[in-house]
Length: 422
Ligand SMILES: Cc1cc2nc3c(=O)[nH]c(=O)nc-3n(C[C@H](O)[C@H](O)[C@H](O)COP(=O)(O)OP(=O)(O)OC[C@H]3O[C@@H](n4cnc5c(N)ncnc54)[C@H](O)[C@@H]3O)c2cc1C
Picture: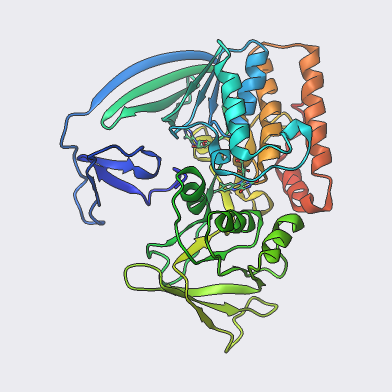
């Protein structure tokens, strides 16, 4: 339910492979399952209408989450002509479903709710004549020789515009996707990513379960548990195989006070039920993460929500043949980058969860760094912008200097290249 995987591909009004989780529903729509592995590649029953357009900008931003929107604001305030593309119909990235108030500092809009921040940043961009925000537009290719992007904009079912975008600098702010877990019954309806539960509850006002089990007691797991309670849902438990919760204490204490048990050193054996989740078996692990015999417990639940970590979405950077390294501390495969967030491909920058799994506040600050640096690469700006970029990098360094971010610091040390901060 965040537009990142292939689990929701269905045939809609005869058109194959429609990503239903980011396709607005319409009256009378016919939504069908596609067949399994042996099926023929389905052909559209109606003729598709495909147009073509060539576009040229100073800066192309891929992804309109907090990182991409912040990057576009900085670059456009330096006079750059900016295009911001997002595959979702609504800009804002993951912020659109975050109903809790952010804490932190004034630079990252402490006290505002996530969806309010998304709207404020988008509204500011829409006021600017040198910025185009293009929703429902997915970047699917990169032409290396001319450094241009290929994308397609969906204007309705079967109506697409293929775009070739030339830009002097590109900012990849494609975010992250949720990880899953392998266990019997993980394909039952009712098993979903915590992000999907968040989307259903907070964007569409739909209760995805009445009594779910949440797996993962990190920030996403405990925040979703809190939001579930606000939506009138009785969370049975939050379980986590780790010894200690990785969530901020303020979040986990809040849900403990609400009476939701957080069971550390616990994981799921299976989910079961006829046609949908009706229960789950959980068990305890020892210091070496081996199951403790006899610790299995059956719990009656009608949903299992997985909040077991995120993986950076780096597909576009892979197409560009950017230098990539596996750094578990940052969430998996991530691009090598200079301090100004330029990757090993000259003129291509990265920001936010695509660079390192962290949080919305750091995504915004990284977006600002990438926005300034990309505009400078495009020949804009002056000394005051170098100063601003360095100050923003210093803010990030200070933010990450707390013991909570030790792993992030260690990870960044492994992928940060020399130079590039000017
Ligand atoms: C499921 C989930 C739940 C989260 N919940 C919380 C929470 O409750 N509280 C909290 O503080 N933080 C939460 N976070 C973390 C926080 O939201 C992120 O750190 C932050 O949103 C990262 O910002 P971003 O701009 O890098 O990425 P995102 O906000 O993910 O934005 C990336 C955007 O890029 C678009 N995109 C990706 N690929 C393409 C492409 N090829 N073409 C066009 N567009 C593309 C996506 O549609 C998306 O809109 C959550 C993250 C996730 C993934």
